[in-house]
Length: 274
Length: 274
Image 1 (cartoon, each protein chain N blue to C red):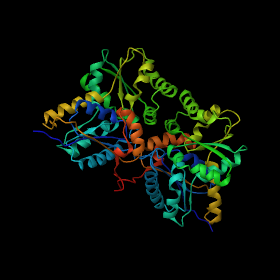
Image 2 (image 1 turned 30 degrees about the horizontal axis):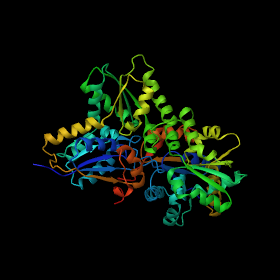
Image 3 (image 1 turned 90 degrees about the horizontal axis):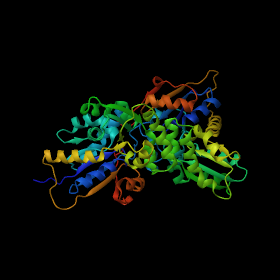
Image 4 (image 1 turned 180 degrees about the vertical axis):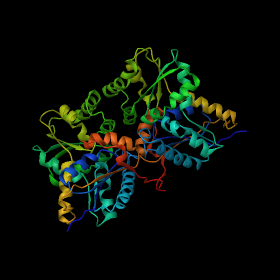
């Protein structure tokens, strides 16, 4: 048995491409369809109701591509819309990035002091705090909303004065306490491109984890458990869809993907006015 | 004759409140309805087609409030959607912020060297360059897209290290030339709250202008010309509408308005899923 239908991956924009990249590396035979909701990004400053409505609409479009699974490659959408999506799409498997990210954090931390850098929306619902405490009830978890990191990543300003000053400002309240965290969760798919600067500001003793790698592993496990794997020998294909701004998607998305994306590789889809 | 119907004002989010404030100051007897499209902000990184579609939808909602005039309190939407809106809404008067901003710049500049700081979308269509050249054909106009300023203003980071480093980075290419501008146009309604820092980085000889004051004057003139003025003695009322995030609108909007806005003063309206 082999299932060559694609895996549907979505994000508010470009950040989720860090997860897409990990999926492609771990599951090279799978076909992937990535949809970035560029027309309405960012999700991280918006309400749970709005993000859930957008996520349902985005997923509905992915269903028209006959996907066998949905990966929510966005921490904000995973935080607020995982359960509504699971309910709406059952029995289709839906995987978010929060639980895999929490797992990575708990595995990395020796002291149990963990800091979560995320969007305003993710922090507000405390999704990482809950997920980490489920795995490690005694863990000490701090959260910090880091909205500006999203724009910095989207602008491609991934190093230099501005990113450093921003990181210092966000990390100051976390490291001014007596018991500093030994692990930082990059709780937004945009943040891995800023990892070098965040690491520099946090100092050498602190481990940085993100959800990309562990999410790819969770997807692999779910495909196996449900016999949904593509078992052929050839490489899978990756299809890019966006609700706006093909040029911007290609230009900045390439930074996240680590490979060139051309504007003509990005198909524009209309979710709102269709 | 007196017309007490409200003036409809819209923006992608909160920035347009700088224009609203100027309108309220200049036209205290007018009723105002402000709609911030918080569910889809920012507009400045999105395509002309998408911004135009959003602007048409936003305006359509304002018509349900029986408005007598539309003010586009957003440079991006004014840049790309003024003509489509005028056409769609005729004979209702529609006023954008670009021409008033250009007028302010030309009046302020002695050397004719003008720099425009704006969003990516406004810069792309060159709306200010055209509007300034219409008034002063020999003016030398530079443009710089300053996307990060929008997020800084939205986050309420209006002074400090990060804003200064960002301003230095954006202004460097403008001031490295031999003939530096003597006037900077704050070509996005978010930027006036960052004026102090921008002025500090630009240096003492440079004048900063924005569209708020001149737009209010243009609105006053249009009301007179069409006999649409509210001529009563009592103060007008201001109504706040937003498509998402009443709490954020109130919190950050207050910074722009210079007065407290309470979340319960902000009515949430749904333009997308109605």
